[in-house]
Figure 1 (cartoon, rainbow, N blue to C red):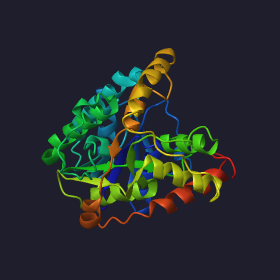
Figure 2 (tube, rainbow, N blue to C red):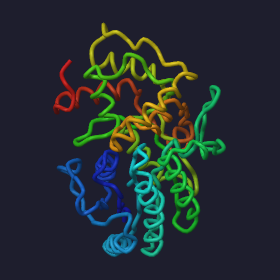
Figure 3 (cartoon, one colour):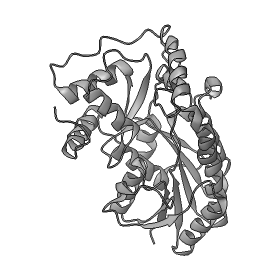
Length: 339
């Protein structure tokens, strides 16, 4: 009998695509969501929802026990996380990303879950320096960045891998994920700001590895099905500098004749924006332009996804095609203005 899969954070951006991916391949799908969570992304998706807050170990344990008791072969995809670069969310990220992962691991062990996949991030692998391209075996070098999201995702991944034998754990490390979404996502906010001309005259000096959300969901499924215990798999289609990403997105949003960014801010000058961001954050703790945001935009997250391609036969679509199709869908549903 085919295993059943419980997906934590099922109502999120990637989570909803994971639900569709596993349903399309014949799995019984369960989701774990907070009781008061926005479930717009789950519209039209047939799954059984269990309710628990990752910060509540007893609630998580009860939800995992109910899931396991209702199926023959229980598998878990732990996808839920809080993504923020605001100092005000430091404790929330520790509670959800790190301690919440430990709660899910403990509950999965108690419920006799037979296989466990942890959705981590490339930021938990490290940061590329001096033209490096990193992979799953690169030494950890980002402990001193001072970024709460990076620290808590790394700690969560370490906790998951420590249970590799007990729970048959494997890990995926996606790059920045792009694609259509019913509610909101960081990549949608980026495209909205760019479409309105609020950003894009110049760009940050850093860069990121990117992947389409459909391809990321497929990579998760393949890693769960055929990945190796204790193994990490980077899910990145390609790397783009911020200058390349902004230029590509501007062209797809506004036409071939749009003026490209003038250039990237020199790396040596970029830290001068930190005091301004710190001031804005002090005046408005909810601002997206925080000190940590500015710092991260100056870093280079260049990764290769060779292991996923060779061991899992993962074949992501070219990122330009992914971004073009995402913009078309987001225009059609009103999330982006027409050209």
